[in-house]
Amino acid sequence: MAVYTHLGPEQVSLFLSQYDVGDLIALKGIAEGVENSNYYLETTKNRFILTLYENRVDPADLPFFYALLKHLHEAGCKVPRFIADRDGRWLQEIAGRPACLIEFLHGVSVTQPNRLQAEATGAALGQMHAALADFQPQRPNSLGISVWRSLARQCTTSGLENIYQGLAQRIEAECDFLELHWPKDLPMGAIHADLFPDNVLMLGNQVTGLIDFYFACTDFCGFDLAVTHSAWCFAPDGSTFHPDLSAALLAGYNRHFAIDVPTRDALPLFLRGACLRFLLTRCYDWINTPANALVTRKDPLAFLRRLDFYSDKDNISAILG
Image (tube, rainbow, N blue to C red; front, side):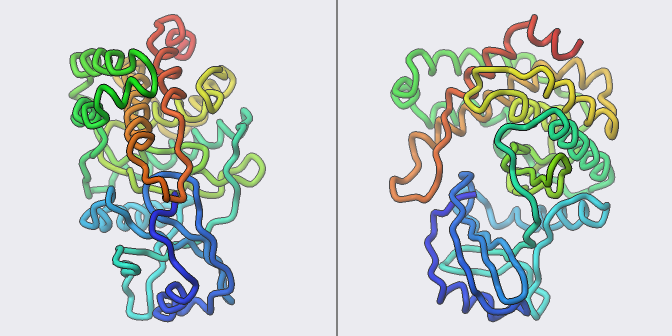
């Protein structure tokens, strides 16, 4: 979440007049995240999230996200619902951007997860994958392995070298390795693809919501698990790996969606791929984020450190047991 398009209370009040949700009494931009513009709204009836879809989100993908969240909600997963207006429309426009009003879920995102929170998150991810086993719509992964090399080149060698000396060559070598060894025959399904701690809401040690599905796509479930593992099992700067969180997250996941042998065998590749994906997008955002955007830029090197960790076979052996 972030704010690129700035709104005033008059604009938002006019927008809300299409809904039966009460009158606006509080409006606040949300700086976390990098993808869309997001606002916290409080009305005389309830609380909501207003999301404006910026240039990286294709409006043609929005029906996929809507169908995905509807499917998960109906399966009992803790996800937010899109709110329809009085005419039943869930997709609107404000300030020239496609926009949706979204259910507000209670809970907070943890910054220093404990073992029970990691286990609960693994379980929620496993439950989500199980619920999506019969989900039919598909969306290609727009930030999957097929685009990593071109994304690196969009960052330019000089841009990458300004972040860290030798980074361009390191990324090129990792692209070579992963393109050569990436799995091709594992089952695919709908995945979240971005289940970082700031996209999981918790009360105590219980998950109360999975949010921000705008990277969701059709890909390997093992890749989704790898993204979550890389996000939850390290210190934020990637300098320290937490084996207790790793074991708890994998155990929680495996209870609800058993890791099959081919996925387990491919997990070392998925872990490295997850790190490369976020290293690249963080590099791109570091180089290209507008100076006036209300958005918190994230350190790319935090995922270079994770990539180095997962590239060590002894570390992988310790994770997989």
